[in-house]
Amino acid sequence: MFAKLSPRDTLLIVLALCVLGVVGWYFLYYQSREQVIADTQTQLDDSVTKLTTYRAAASALPALRTEVAGLQSQRDLFFQALPQTQNIGSVVAAVQKSVEGVGGELTNLTVSPGAVAGLPAGVRPISLNMAVTAKFQPTFQLLRNVETMSRFSTVNALALNLPSPDSLDPKLNSTMTMTVYTFDPAQAGGAVGATGVPVAPAAPSTTPGAPAGGSR
Image 1 (cartoon, helix red, strand yellow):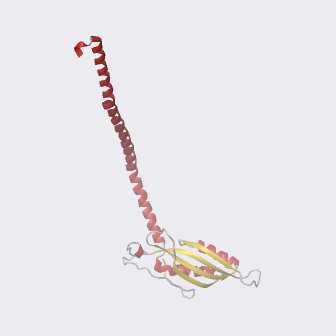
Image 2 (cartoon, helix red, strand yellow; image 1 turned 180 degrees about the vertical axis):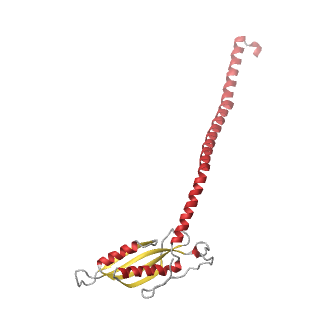
């Protein structure tokens, strides 16, 4: 059949076959290889970015370790500054002394477990609920004294009640709720006291007439 074709037709057929071969090679091989090269380059760029990030993190690691050590030291100092739970009586005695110092009368004081979420292990909130009878200025001074105690504490609520006025400066009946933060080594993963003896928690309870002793 090819023998009957003219040289011109044979040339055209050969050229057409060459064009089809080039097109097939382009779509079936070259284009797919180009996609593989592009994907490989993208992966390489991502790897370089990750490598840069890891190197930066590695260079910052010593500083981070120093910062973590400093934070741990601050945490230890914070725990040391907290009164231990079984010595809550010293906090109660300080509150009673503040009331007496302003000339007020502490008519009721109860100690109960507090409820504060998100505290570190071993830190226990203790709630102090007190009733005080005093004039306005001593009551205000007592509130200031309690807020500025050398303790980690917060005043949660204050209610004032004015009885039948008998003068221009009558006595007020006030109720105050404050939370004192203490440290219980037994709840901090079996920590021990300064003497090396495990410290067990105690359930504090006291009344105005018989404050518990102890100091932090």
